[in-house]
Image (cartoon, rainbow, N blue to C red; front, side, top):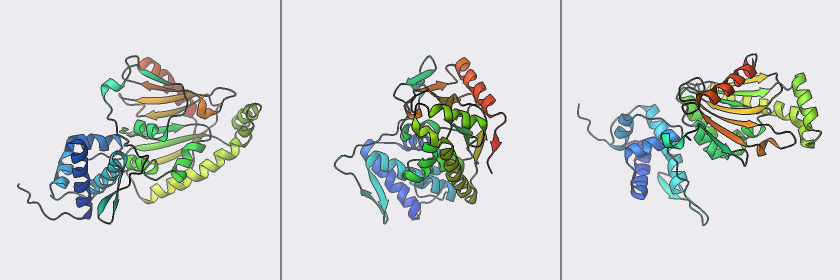
Length: 300
């Protein structure tokens, strides 16, 4: 059936303007834009996106996801923001484009892992890592102080929106923290504070993180998204953190950071492991995670 173009609604016009900006600046095709949107956590079918660009009817959900995603893409790569029906150039003197990289098989090291010796990755790197999730993202740590603060202290488009985008398309996001009232927590922080005084407040940080994450969970629940945002606590002496993407699936990947005694956790090196290239190493850490969480309790 032939679809006749019609006057677009505001969101459709926004997506069309954004696409033309990207096409003029970088000669992006529709397919290239779709791949970049998916890398940012926004998945739209080729047919729906083509209908939007060409002014045909499309579902509200596809239109909303396209609008949210392409705004973020244009802001990153062109420094433009949507305001009053048009994109406004917001580039300052020190502005530089943040090109969204597309994951390819060549990005996975042959030996199946990549080492980051400088410690905790930047928020953008973390978001790019979990944006490709299809079923599940797992954030496992001790206090999750930095993680929980991202929802409140950073621009919504930097972290909260990418998490929301995952939930919107049915991906579950699961958070694990050390049980603050456990003997394990008391032993852990009493030992750590012998070298790093700030660790004395570790239990309080966990409790504060639980409050912040609970508020985030309730907000997502009110929006009735397709995926679940879940919070759990475990009772074991922690050895390392995990950021796991689709761990049970064939393309699972994870980031591991071992806790080095006497060092701030943010400075501990990070190891990326890819299941497709090193199943044995991936399986060892995946099994460890399952032991850690086999008796974890849901935080309602």
